[in-house]
Length: 478
Image 1 (cartoon, rainbow, N blue to C red):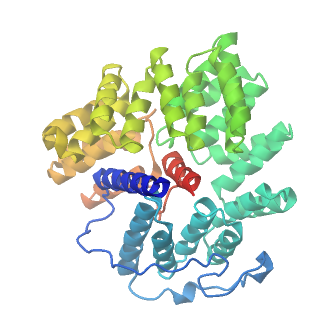
Image 2: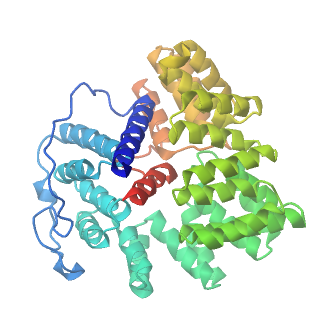
């Protein structure tokens, strides 16, 4: 009986998540008419690499340049690679790891970056560091610099801190932002604030809001108020700052607020340091203490449960946050109902509440719901009327959607208006480099000359908090 129940639950979750994925926009893929081939299930051989070599230690890894194997038309290979990566993501989020692995092995045969994706799969989905290291080394040897961060991360988690630092230093030389940031964190943990500042300044040069926040928090720790103010102004007044969130803005405001506000953000930052290390118990102790200073601590507490894959507890704490008057909790509950439970009616209810409270993210997700689901009977014009509200609140994903919508309508003036807004306005929320690149491409197609054009980033699987939640959930069933 228990087996039958488990199977039913598994099928239900798979159906929910595939339904969720199919609702999301995939502008990158212009042709999904082809069907995936049915493949026979194969026995997993996680101690054998994709070349059939048995691996018993890291020393068994053969470091060879496989880039010469990637033959054929570049555009066609890129198209196939993107399709395969999308299908692999679809299978990961639905728990079909065997199929995901097979697809990622196919991706590795198309591009060197495929080895990097396969390494991330082993690391996150299978907790198989041995094969992850194998794939990351293949990727790094073929010029995928981001792979070096994971080589350092795995060594650090294994207790080999000196070797980890060597890898991070190697990544820093190559300009890898994750390696640079981690070196800053290590220096900060050792109270070497001068060295930490050097690394964080390098990260801040990339105009990434997360990197800037690390620098601001370092100054906050040292009671350097003027420096906090200086970088807060840069964060809010420079164009094309990526990754800026409402949370970052709010936390810096707390740093500049009352003693009570400062204590709150100090506890939150300390808790997030534990959360990064997956020390959920100590993180929650600090988040719970933070609630005594500000009810927003409930959002952080809920985040810790979500990071651990505890869905019902996440939902319960978000509901408590809403009861305590934290307006962002409405958006979070809508997101939970949408992503985790696949309950469109409930997510619509909470997004509407968020809309009434003026939350740009809730407004955007409500528009997304109306555009992609037939259940609500909304026209495209109605949905984009709501997108426009969010766009006018400086929410970058909505601005980019309005630009695409205008392009489909062949309204060149509107395309220019929205892309100009995205490229030149300051204080945009959740702006991504991919959006900057998309906006530049739209203008280029219209004959505009683009200076400082962002190079296109290879499509990749992002192991964000939602994907990691489902990975942890599936692991808890096994």
